[in-house]
Image (tube, rainbow, N blue to C red):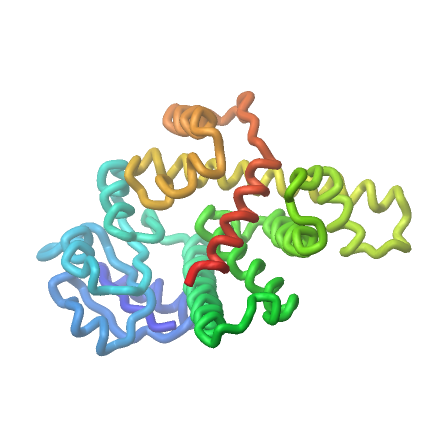
Length: 309
């Protein structure tokens, strides 16, 4: 990955560079102390993948710099600032900022965010490659059934990973369970088309557990793992709800919030969670999520991504 750092504080640039270099996350291809130095030609020339940019700078601030690059920079933007204004954060997100880091810089937070962004870049490339491959297959007029089952499974998993990244939970422990569920449903639909009904939720968790542990596992161990899997998935779904509600709270017109919030969750639940976050409520309240609906939407959206030309 190629990183470009813009911050009027040399200490912060040095800290970011040190973190990136120590963890072998990529190369620092350029630094600047003001947004006025950056333009689309420099971005292209340096092959920048990830741009770190400070919000407040003396000549041209981060918001103005990002606005000038809108539609011209295909990479990812991470904003850093001491400012915690919801209005400015919302504007930054609306202009395409992926993450907003509040100073002072925390090494663990920076590492987590960079790795998430890098993973998303890889996932987007994988989705693009899959869609390109599928288009080529269809252009050759080969019937879809000639595509191997293994390729289909790989596609549904990659599409699922992309969606989990969009939903803010690709790093959650329950994300692996959700990907296993997608593979199971993909195979299930080949054998039993969803003409009558979607398979029961309990059956889904039992089947992915049996595949993981094998039929030789004891019933006690199987039941324990089924329960643990259900809990991991439920926690991941709650985290996704928190993530989307946070985006909506910062910017109601955020593209991810608009695309996914009402699709994966009942909007009354999303609004309830936004209200809790706005009041800084620490209680889990009585918010209930529909696990089966979430899994169904995740599966059908993953299929849609795979089938897009």
